[in-house]
Image: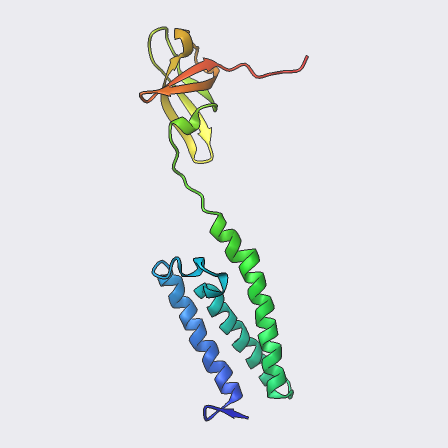
Length: 177
């Protein structure tokens, strides 16, 4: 069977190559098309390109390896592409969109965290604490809550932040007796 003056096998291969190249270009320039897929997941260029690629790949493989009717092969290729596209969207693309993680933090977001004193906190003075977060280790200036001194190596609880200074209190973990 011929389509557009070419054998169907060549049509599938040509579409596969063009869709593959378009997918590679989309990877490089996807920021330009950002937001297009927000209206509907069916309009997402990654989903459309994957559908075309899956359809042409399955169609090409079936045309090459079987002697089935061309319409049957097209129907099987379309059904397979819908299934693979569904799996790609719900198990790869959707989790990637919701997995946006920021390394930014605010001083106020560290309130309630437990840190460790690395420079002793004197009465009416400042010391230094470190806080371990998912972003790494953060070092901050600290003052004692109610002007109480805190020794080196003690664990402290961050009570509040005032003008860039962390107000801390010696941490006493709750233990059952």
